[in-house]
Image (cartoon, rainbow, N blue to C red; front, side):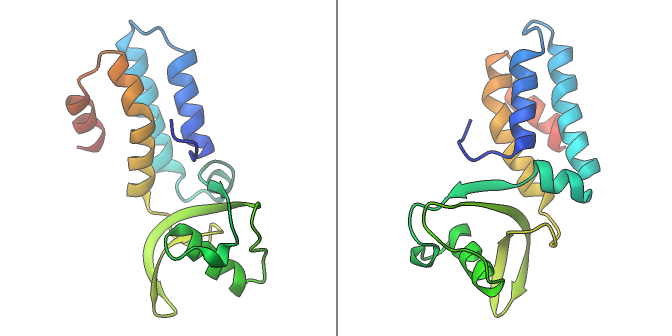
Length: 149
């Protein structure tokens, strides 16, 4: 599992590891299906989004020193909003549907005011659980098609 996972992803991974019998593939399928269903159903629930769907990172240098990527977008947003941009601080961000703002395409936001990119969240969740379900003996191609259609 990556070090930068959402709280929701961590909860799903823990369920897969701790709360199921590896030989009971139906239980594993139910956990996976439930996770993706929950994501679909709660993507617009602001409490769920704010508590479970944020990514975070600790800035290793001043945010202004990052040239591009989510760190740069967070820098721009924090400057505009008068928030901290210091090295060593932990920042939360969300993956949003790309939107043009101030002449640039915005893909990340530090608050839940934008429409989240459900496809990115599903992809991220899949990347967390794929190695686990593969270890349990699932045919990844079949399971992925089952989930994503």
